[in-house]
Length: 247
Image (cartoon, rainbow, N blue to C red; front, side, top):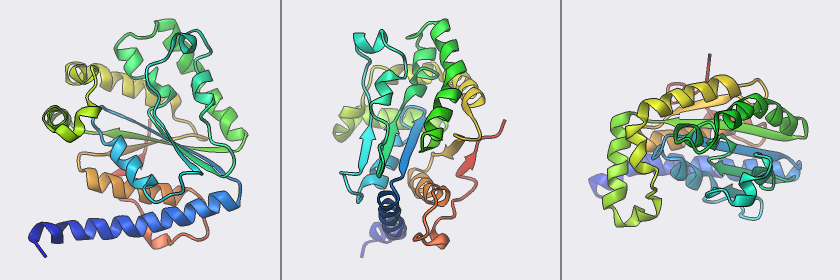
């Protein structure tokens, strides 16, 4: 076994064991008609795709959906803001993972001025009641914000440009991520302050180390969804990597 293979083995072993727990969790969700919505927000290149891939890798595609919506259509723009997202909410026995969500309005749309101040203010006023309504209807909402350092973001965005296997990740918004770093930071802080709630709290993920972030998000997810079949010893996340937002 090569040296590089040896260094990868602990991560792969941990990941496999956690993915076994995720399969058990899914069985529990199906058996009990539960509805689970996991929202992933964060800076560009923070690793949302990688975390979602490891969560869903061995789950049943019939009861697991990943939602990553593109640019809103003219109809979307002229509709109630949450309407396009409502169609993708989980039904009973389903787990839905949103790779970005209605919080686009509080992030990219706010920073890039894709929405008006009135639209932004309306979102800030209504997002907590909207999520409360979903929770009251039986949907459990878990929200993660993946954060990385400015230097790490620069490195990852440059890797996208030169890596032929990552060309699909390139976006026109990438070029503005570093330029508007402080604006995105301010938008993030406002979003967390206004939308952190008892029924749908935010959890911050320190994601400079991709592997550590993936393992700890899975551990944390397993820890906060009730499931009698899970191995409690495997569900303790590192509090320095994943922790609840605090005002």
